[in-house]
Image: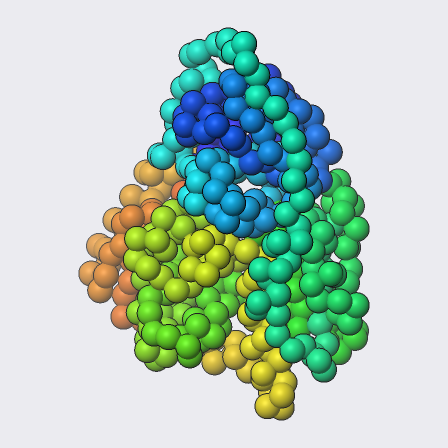
Length: 446
């Protein structure tokens, strides 16, 4: 089954996985997680109702009950499984992928993620080698409404936003279920009608072309800040008052400043994160920790290290106060509070970002290559032959740090890409190093 990935189960529905596959997943999931009840939520993709029905057939055939919360953001599932003590949860979503995709995000009790190394590989084996044998005592399906509980939780972080001019692009995704009730009528909302065909743009804010509408909204209306959510509202990107997309890893430092002002502690960031973020965390009296890319890895490491907050280049932000999980809306509320404070001081939102733009950064560059591991090895060999790195991190691809630049080269865990990030002291050096790395990779590009 092609849909089993490093972090979740995801692919083109009808090609990479089918209703029959989902029914098997549902049947074996309670056995895998020793669950008597499975909490289930879903996004608004066209295929989600069919997947929901197949998943419920499987779960109930295996003798477990389903508690459905209906249409929901992914963070709503995390909140519910953590606060109400469910044995397991599944969110039906393909997050930021195009509309023909769908998938399943699985958690254990406590909102602990289940990835390929902690259960999905076993689940895949069960689905591929065992047959469904319905139990005589089938489980039941019933619904609960948790929307109000989750909104009440979020309101603890709701700042005074009076006077702050805000634009919000919901990407026709699940953030629209909650954001208007939370923030009220004053922000200017676009694409806030939930539509799983995503008629206005793809629900991936990391692609700058998908940010065109929110950037225009901010500029045309002279707004202080813009927010754009992905499809299931676990990720978020920001637009400053000048209409610039804020590099998402820099927001980790903004969140760190908010939390470290209250208590000192550890802050998690991924292996692609700008050096400026770790420098800022140290300046604030915090302790930065670098780790692997991916929500399932980050959540476990957050727990292990006792981190207060964490973030990734992809726009996932994790909070100790949210069960070490990611929530786009919670991240938005905290950053809006920072923007509101700056405005009260007569400063623009970009004030807290410009100070973090200390280096020339390539952003994430994607290469479709054959033989990913060999390509990474070739890049490393070329670079370390020329100069010995000051530091080497090899827990997620490789990050080589030199005195005036660094590079991260890693394989995507969800897509057929080799991903490269380069950062240097100046644009000239960045261009030089990028050209050298692209030359090495040219022989591997498909």
